[in-house]
Length: 177
Image (cartoon, rainbow, N blue to C red):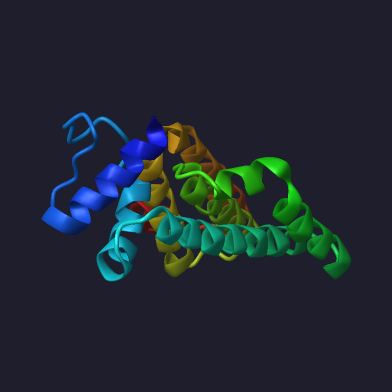
């Protein structure tokens, strides 16, 4: 199972310094989620309660990011609160928090990336924001290859920002990369 693979990868990295899944593979599953679990396993011991604690933290971060995304998109405080609470009680998000699945990490990374892209499109396209977008995108790629096509969102957001404020697009693209 994927859950066993992610657990085994994090456990082996925390104990031996090498990522290995239950089948002995070094590069079959995406390493992002096990890389996040590893320091917690190293400090607190490898166990599902530790992973579930990390998942709860990630779920809280995701709910907060959904709240902020709704606000940035023009929603009221009430709409943002409803969005964050809706994510918190949405059955798939609750279910995933109980499973050792990469989606626990890929979801906040994707929502965070979407939030940054909206900020860029609104004209907040500093090199720091572009660097954060690149960091979130890169972490998303390590967590799951399905993220690859979302990189187009950065290009679209940057194009919108540059239409409003011409110049410095190549530098921001380089920082993102």
